[in-house]
Length: 97
Image 1 (cartoon, rainbow, N blue to C red):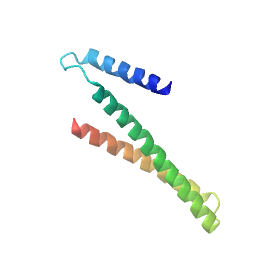
Image 2: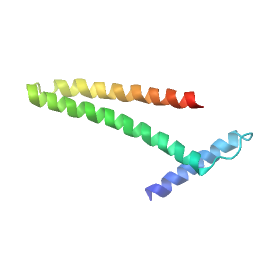
Image 3: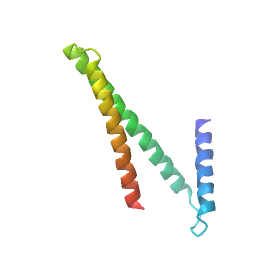
Image 4: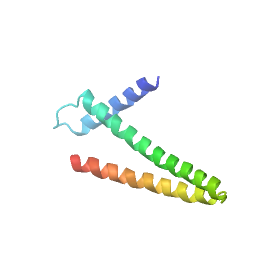
């Protein structure tokens, strides 16, 4: 079910893109899978950054006995690292065009 919904949405995005770019040749499935790979890379990168921050904060709180403080600090740092990596991914993808 999820795979079918994802393929439908990706195909719909490509058809909308083709309406606006009539001078370009039609896109192939490899372009569609490339777009899906880019979207999944963004999600995994942000989730991993936040998860590493939370786990590191919990570990340091348990080790030093400073219950919420390291968790809060490293959670915020994890979110910041995720946003920074999002901009880096966008910059890298924009440079390849």
